[in-house]
Image 1 (tube, rainbow, N blue to C red):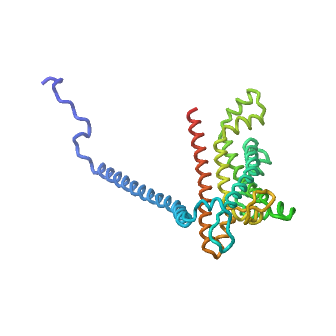
Image 2: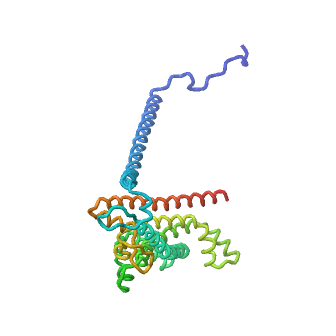
Image 3: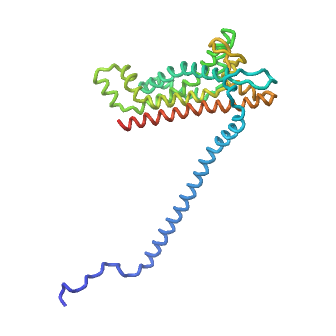
Length: 312
């Protein structure tokens, strides 16, 4: 038989039975894979339980507030004034308007200062002043809100001799400053240095580059941080006890005490009348709705600006 017709030699190891060492190695590899899969399943289960445990309290609270407060919501609740204690009916129109006024005053006070401080810390991060501002912002973030109220009472209420919406808004604005400042700083730091260099090369002044180029590029994150800060101060009660104080009558004056949903909820919650308890639950539901609306707007702004950037 010629060499061309002879069958090719089988590769080494083909058709041979695995050795004992090879079988032991395969068994160890299989046990390792099974152990890793079991450990992975265990960790995924633990993380799932942790995620459910983190969201379960919020779901339970929302469900309970909706159950207790939805029955008291009506057109009168949004359009009428509170009734005297012991009388049925009435609403929280003055508290809803007062909350919006206080949040608006807080935004006017806190947003410019917070954004300016964050921009300075990001653009001049190595200076001693920026380091000091950054440290104090972190300290103020952890400061109890009632301390802000006492500060507003000492500075804005005591000198003039009466409570006012301006003092309440200033207290809420002071709470916004450290949150907005830190968010602005982090967002500005994400702006590429190439944009700054390009603007400076075109003859832009440093201050104009920071305000027109850098701040505009980081505006999506800054707006999101500002909205989150607004949602946080909308539900604060302790600062308003020492500044805005509350008002059972209709008032939109910044120089007079003003009502707010957190204050009215607190007053009705400790009341002995069931009718006011129902209004307190309804007010809690409206307050959560305001906070939820601000949070949804913040997410929408983030996604829309992110989609526009991706499209560019």
